[in-house]
Image (cartoon, rainbow, N blue to C red; front, side):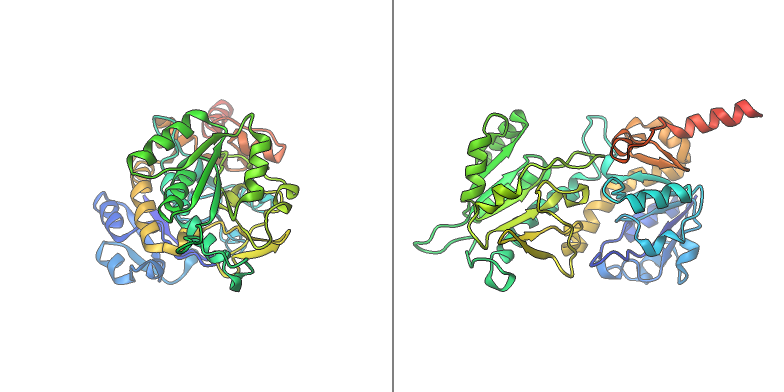
Length: 383
């Protein structure tokens, strides 16, 4: 199969979807890999490395977008809409729920999109989202530390504290991959960490894991603790939102009123801004302009935080996605989907049809289950 690897153009995005070692494995299996010129340079992989791995380097990105399978990192950008070709499969983060313009564009272009963020493994986990969630979680306390600095509009709190001055009070909402990673880093920085989650079992697992590492955080089930939750927000120096509802928009869990009770110059980091975020005050920012102030609180709401550590993030993401790229290329798109229900769960749209229940619900539209089968049946019936 011919596989296209475009250069990412989202603001500040420096990751690339395949590393040269992965390209070498794909070309050894007989696949034709087209890499857009300089696609990997920002992650530390030059064109010569891809060429040595068997790829063809192309200067014209248009040739990339004619490949049957396109593997990328971030969601399609507006400048890429005109390059979409009907029937091509795009494998990458999709983020269709929050952006009606993007959703309408891919439906009109009749492309197929398999989203990293909704692919599941045999245990129902999210194997392609997980490594990026863990990286974003580890970064969250670090970017919060910068947001607290007076140069960013913060109140000048040093997140680690200093002799005789306590470290920051950090509230983390969510105990999954990103929340757990954020809690571990914040605890290592010496912060007073409280983690809230709607999942009591997940909280217990997180507490045990951190204790094994010699770290202590306070874990509190969110249900039934609403008043204590609002008080914790008011007392916090940093609030990190780490809640994700895969394939659908995130719930609003922190109101404007709650944030208004925080001390001026505190910091909010909304890791799940890709899916709308959990703060009433959240609005998406970018790596070139990462923060804004609302209700006297510095907000950091960048959707591609892992791009800050592009080389590490590229290695982690490419390692997770490569087996799925192999499956799609080796078996063919439809056969790969029919053979792996978890991969099929990643299909968001298919040649003009919405294939994911969460996306259909957010769009107020009809869902077509497994449209690659429905269309195949309809075609056979009309023959």
